Every structure is written in structure tokens, then in C-alpha cells.
Image (cartoon, rainbow, N blue to C red; front, side, top):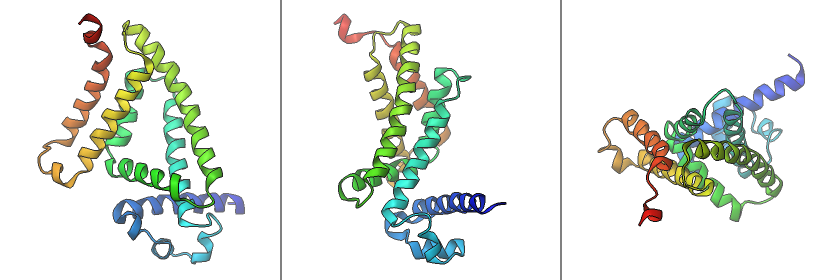
Length: 203
């Protein structure tokens, strides 16, 4: 393995372990010292891959966004399959969804020296949204649904992130019962939304 390949492999491992530590310990417990110790690397080696913890967090957000983009680029899947994959990505790891959203909101107002990384994040997200919008338009047309793409996508986002918040809640976890049953129920709800009668239009 050449030096560049070794660098990339080490970087992938750093991101994987950093995300694991972050999810297990939260922002306050995910220190660069702990990360270096977990990887058995010198702390200085970490700085070859990022300059600060905020930059590391941004790189994790970008990594997650790229993963979502790759998922949506699979043209063999139908819209319901894409929707299920998107929702399960968030609902199988609700702690990641909630925490990443909180980190992004915080960094957007307090992060230092990471504007170019936000630009990269948003560029990937815009690319993903363009694909999603086109796919959603076709799906709604096939159902002859009166819903707009904007309203349907907003409904899916709200349902998914609300579900993630509930699944991540230590209080509600005691009353939820089977998480798999709940996840399937949320996906079924999302798919049923555009098939509902136009209540407002018929009122």
C-alpha cells in the first residue's frame, strides 16, 4: 500500500472511531486525547488530518452527507425504497441524527475557520436535494397526488427527525415497545401521506 493509500485508510479509521466516541460520550466526552489513545496514535498525527475538533466535526458531517448522496444515486431503487433507506438511516441510529443536527446548528453560529467546509457540506446537500426533488416529482405525479414536492419533502423531514428524537429519548424509550415495529410504522405513514384525500381542498 502506497503512502497516499495509507493516509486515506488511516483517515477513514479516524473518522469511524471519532464518530463512535462522539455517539458514546457526547461532545464533551469526545476529546482529541481520547481519540488519539483509542487509535494508539500520537496526537500530532491527528492534526495531519484536521486542525481542530470543530473541523473534525465538520468532516464527520460531510462524510455523512456524502453517504446520503451515494444512497440516493442508486437508480435501480424505486421511490418507496429510497424513502425507506433514508428513514432507516436516521431511525436505526437516532442518536447520530439528533447529535449531528445539534452540532451543525452550533457550528453554523460559533464555529471558527470552517466556512469552506460548510460550503462543501451545502454543495453536497444541494446536489442530493436536486436528485430528491426530481424523484419526488415523478412519484407524486404517478400517484396523481395534489401535494406539492415542497410540502411532501417537509413532511418526510419532520416525520423522520421527530421519530429520531422520540427513539433517542431516554424517557420515551421505556414506553415504545418494539422499535422495529415503530420504524416500519413511520415509513408506512410517510408513504401514505400523499395518498390521503385533499382535505383542505374538499372542505
